[in-house]
Length: 107
Image (cartoon, rainbow, N blue to C red; front, top):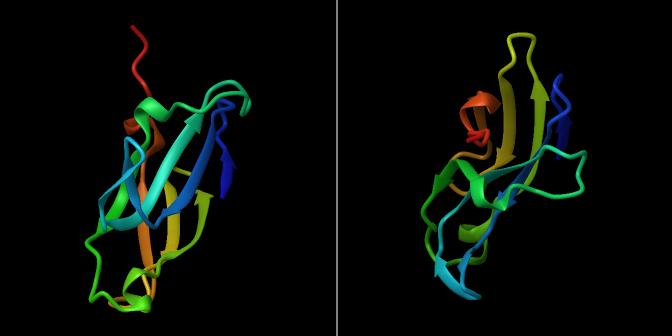
């Protein structure tokens, strides 16, 4: 899901169904991730990709891996409310987070 912050930063929230490092499965962790673009979507700041919520893989069944359908909305106070499916244990997760805490630091 895409959001445009008042300063023009694009925020993409997405389901994390596999954690891959160097083209190999790194873990069975699942959750909800965030990427930001500071140039209208031309590039994405992958060096600062963040997980705003995660859970370990469940029970090895097909539904044990299920998560997805992220959607976010910007609140008047500047926080973001993100909802995504975490099907076996909870059904859904709501995460309130602040984009400025994830933004890259310019040096």
